[in-house]
Image (cartoon, rainbow over the protein chains, first blue to last red):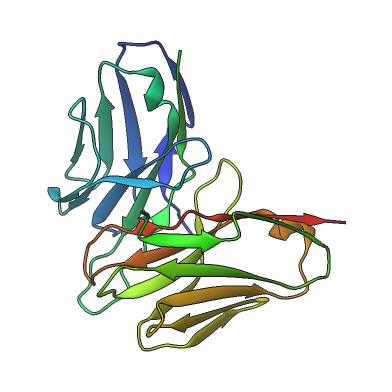
Length: 115
Length: 113
């Protein structure tokens, strides 16, 4: 079965550069979530989109922005990168259905290293 | 204080042994509680999911329990295997619908031969 695809899998950037992470949800899933997981930490929710509209916002820095496109894929744009942005960035997707579990399926993650 | 706390932080057991991981949460009201397995550098994979009305759920050698009154959950792993070495994360959803997960602090399990 198709899973959540994230690209790139690894990314190395320098301070003050920009980065764009991409997430392709499971086919027919309409909701996308972004999480940031620092070394030895639990994933922190950043932002989510449902039907191309922002549905919830977590601890996403103002330097970051994200959007969901008409084909439901999502991109996380990160500007003015800082050393502390080095982390594993997960994308998850789910299918919104009233009364359902709304199970989130996670992608393999993008490991961002800021030098 | 984290809304979902897990214990122990790390655990080492011998192959074939059983173990139990704990999860205490303060999220209320909540829709459901999940246990995930996360291999190093990979995305979390769902093991079990329980609503507030369920007490136990099994998935092979994994059995999760839930006590909504005391806001505690446990994950019991039977006859551990080397491939069980991973982080186990308790995740609570505060409401139904499209909503973020609240992740626990995780327990890092190491199974030795």
